[in-house]
Image (cartoon, rainbow, N blue to C red; front, top):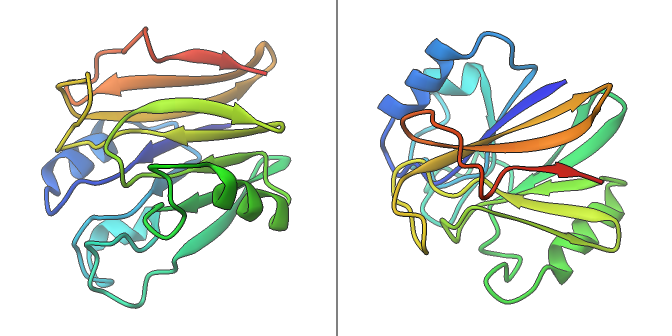
Length: 168
């Protein structure tokens, strides 16, 4: 199982199309909001997205739950979940949806945290990075026989080993 996670591209569709052109083995394409695109954008034929604080299209869900192999993941943007201060509201979403991973955006800062058995994974911003990372980023989650891994990449598709890690 491979899931590609991207967020906060803020009208930059070039990088999203670039990802589609180089990855052929992705099982689930997730976007954590702030695309600033409308619902009829062709990218939504592949990416499953949620509404961010900069998305004016009301047709996007605020939160979505996706089945990934034998488990569930929650996707949300985070502006309504106080992600800059706490993981508590995201934890509630995970518990309500029986999910073991929450993918989110909003902060533009790539990171992984674990609380009460739930992983909170932010792929960062593909086009407007913040924090110590000065290059856009995205992430790929993989579940294999050897375990579960989250690998972060910069917008030039180079692995960011300081962020990438095995989960569990």
